[in-house]
Length: 608
Image 1 (cartoon, helix red, strand yellow):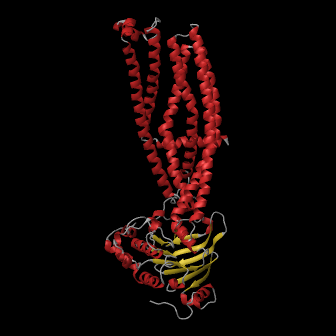
Image 2 (cartoon, rainbow, N blue to C red; image 1 turned 180 degrees about the horizontal axis):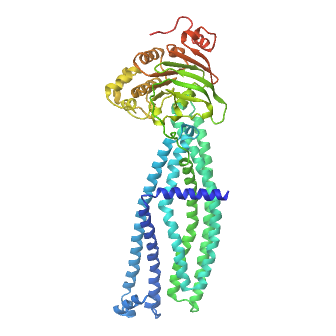
């Protein structure tokens, strides 16, 4: 387990290091600047010590020889006593230098950090785009969004705030102890004795707080997912009067999230309270002991003031160590959650992936499939869809008819032992994914429409955006007249997920979008379910007589399928019937029973 943790830590560090490529110069500037800022900051107490002991007092100057010579050239001790503002100017000068270096460090870390975060966001988004559909279906959208926003912000805040503090803390502790030991060993040993206590306490806190932050992050992801789901399905919420139920559900989860942060606040409060006690205790002991040594002459007044100043500089970084560990624990959790995404295996093409002609026969041979180890959705499917034909699929919900074409489009990958699907004799696993999907058009029962104008939506992914071509596709989808009736016509904005238009209009716009792409294989997955019978007939007639290529129609309504060249009837993952409309009516089976149940047995068949 320890090795795994170490490996995980190395993985996080390696990820961050890789992301710094292109920004490392800014980080170097920041780190060097913060070191000089610390050094110049420590020179101010030395000015105070020299002023009290050697200017106001009679102790010899304990300074580098060159600096002593320079002071003597100015007139020595007496000149400084008469011009104490010069000593103040030295202190002010070092303070200005410290401020300048702090400014440079902040500018460097800001530029370096934003470069890292931009690359991280780009990598996350790009990687998510390449992850298989199966991965997306097993992860909540809200949780993914929360990781790409909140967790990225945690990493950003650590890099821009805490990373410099870690470096500053190390140098503050090292330099403070070095200067303190150079002035008084006994007092320094007292100050040093408190450091392991605080460090040990902070380490125990770090382990405990890390688990709490992980729980809080997971709960926040669930809360975000719940809100995203509700906002997406707002029409359903309204239609079924579920507002109170949804509010209660959200409040329950929100209260759980709040309780976690309250408990986390208790832990943080306890840590800071105990830490403040130890810090104040250390300061008081040093002040009392220092006063005693100064009173018996073992410590000069200037050394006492400088020592107390350095001790104060020591206390804060040691005290701040816990806060840094707290932020580090949050960052560790967030990076781990982001790495879970980045380590997910993206879709890959086979070596030497092919780009064959896509106008051949589609053949399913001994195809079986199951989702995530569950029961089989498809069982030993054998189908041939001739090139250029119109092929119908009929089946109840859960019969596996849609799964067939999720496999054809490689939204789910078919294992070698579960059969083969070929197009023109080429196994689809050997075909480039971009090529395959670029030649298959799919319209789903509930199509997704982006928030664009209707013209942009229909022409999305097409080679041209010419209005006449867009309108031609819209006419085939029987939506042109409807669009022209809108006040802004084809420039009408479609709301998020197409909420500003009806379900039937959304389906027809999606059909027009697919027809606009003019792919050789076109799949209609129950995509006419929300349109009326007359519109259904118009669309089918247009597809039959004006659209080329292989057309596959999946439907529950027999009128949508009856003019297909061949119809497959599916039940419980199997093809139980196969033939034309007339042939299937001659057989006693599922097709004829559905035909009669839909009231088509009394001469109500449609023809074009």
